[in-house]
Image 1 (cartoon, rainbow, N blue to C red):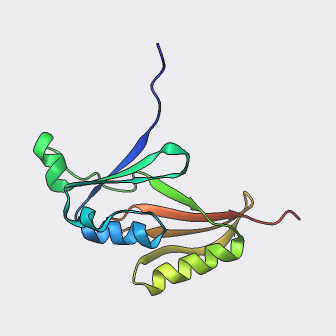
Image 2 (cartoon, helix red, strand yellow):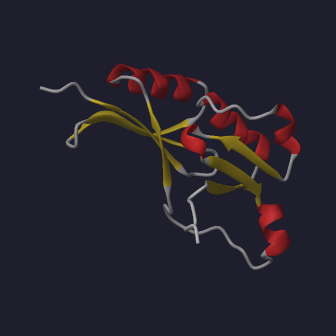
Length: 132
């Protein structure tokens, strides 16, 4: 028997169009008609999918569902260089999205920054720092 394969990450969103606009701004290809759908998906490199469901959709099969409190997870987006982390962070903040942690050089050897998506999920931007 073939073992199960990790295939997707799912997010529950309050406002589908607002959430998809954020992820499109980060480069995901999501059709415009998904803005009004109860469920949407975007293909990620390596064959994974990022899935979006509205609160209403989740409550249709789990009526007692409530949004967890506190940080439950984060996503990470690799940038081509440390400078690209700074540029992408600035571009997203200038576009009206929430910056959580300004770019900084992490002790594990990466340039790092954190945005918050419209539902408060952390989205990290990172790139390897040059070897010293």
